[in-house]
Image 1: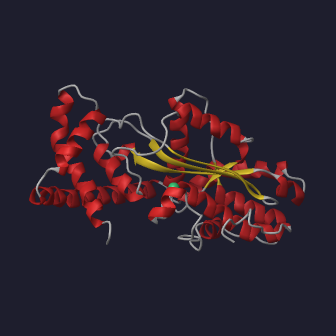
Image 2: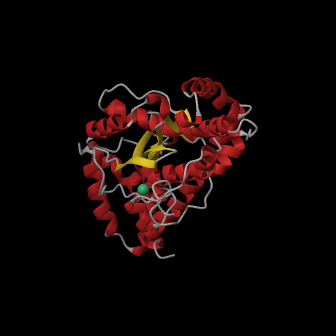
Image 3: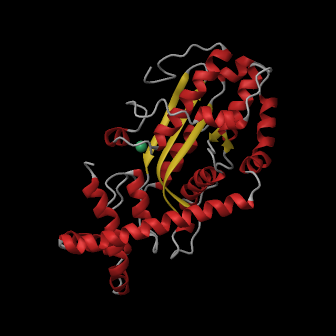
Length: 327
Ligand SMILES: [Zn+2]
């Protein structure tokens, strides 16, 4: 693998950080200063010493994966059926939507919004941290109508002013998965005011923002929490509760063709369709280069493509290159 070396140094550095951080922190340095100093120290280590940290990193990854598995299982046990929870929360919203539309033309002209985030980490996952929630790293937001396709989009990397104490090594592991370097963060903005402003300006109806809860409710919560996090940074009122995309999809199919009644699982399956993965222009400029499916913009575009493919024919809309950029 061409990037195995880089990969190795990132996680083993997390272990190195665990060893050395506290004494520097006690000296009164900020987390960011500590990381900068230790990063250059780490680079000077012998191959043998690095190997030792790599071994520990492997073990940490194993423990982290096991903990995530246990947690997911526990979440699943708690809920008899994750879709039931989604249903309770969102079925009312989607029923209300029926009142909004009087005709297929109404639906065709309506502006819908799709949002997704890549996150830095689940705060609960970092056992040293007492904080909860999800910190966003990358935002993807799309506006579309069935008639005109994708009419607007917003993509932004989020730069943290400081990595919250106690989560550095977890943040590194996530950064590696999502291929978004955070040490130092080369791109992104920490102007949260501007980010929230952009989102507010773009989204014309808070009732029309959707995200996909794929196979677990967890994904949905991380998107909602990331959105909340951004707005909390500027003490702004949030956009409110996101709605579940698979249910919108189901609603819109049945609205157009009452005899078609796909299950929510069918809709999730269709929306998670991977056929647009790895094609150029689906991902943001950065993720396009480094070839990964973990891109916030890529996922909202893929959802939109899947929606268009099914819904445009049902609503009599032509699929143009504004609908599917890569057509
Ligand atoms: Zn991206």
